[in-house]
Image (tube, rainbow, N blue to C red; front, top):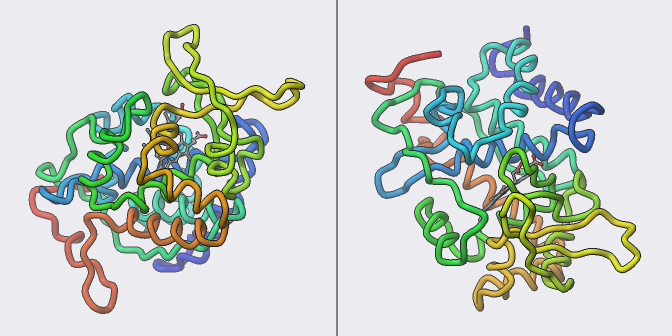
Length: 287
Ligand code: HEM
């Protein structure tokens, strides 16, 4: 067991588990990034509910939300890290793992601070349906991310995470990856979104998504969600899609800022960075 507060030791163990030859495309990285995002992305700024505090996905009420299908794999990958460092909260572990995975897959360093609690405050539990639905349009994307406190530029930057991983027909119903090198963080998602001709198709399960196939058919069939295409087609979002397609450094910088902000939703800190709203949550319980 590591010394409480030794986050470097936790980081190292997260790095070690990223290589998973038997799982998916050989990496736990993408699903860990999605776990971090879904743990935080339930936040509602107006009522100060949801967010990463509490690690509510451990329980059926949040974990069983169909939007979170597949994320049990990410949580299981992290169990040995939790066992080796039992002092870290799940809420800190999940958010840290997302940041470490982005960096290890070639992305930017993301500023991460500890202090989240595993107390579940019943009055802060998010209702289901707060995470975005990939089949919808730009107004839905804005409603979801404005609720968390993000602006149009931050929304586009965050969606650049679709450079990683894939859709799974048995999880979301959508199928396939956004880019060919799906365990390498880059701005390729924006380049393909802006640069290729996408075609709307209906999958055998009735789900509609956009696809691109190489003329020579060599690459895997790439895909875009309707919400991804909405970024390309919206007059404001598309400016940022183009900027990030042209400038990888700008994307990395903006992604790092927006992801760090996402991980902090619902966490309040004093001037020294100590969390002031986590340890004595009233009416909560501890795992
Ligand atoms: C995967 C939807 C924003 C990171 C997915 C999947 C869907 C989806 C449907 C496929 C899940 C599966 O079948 O396994 C959306 C929608 C978004 C959004 C509708 C907003 C409009 C984001 C953001 C991030 C993110 C903001 C992170 C910053 C990921 C990652 C995967 C993924 C890394 C791949 C997971 C894997 O390979 O297992 N997303 N997402 N997404 N999403 Fe998003």
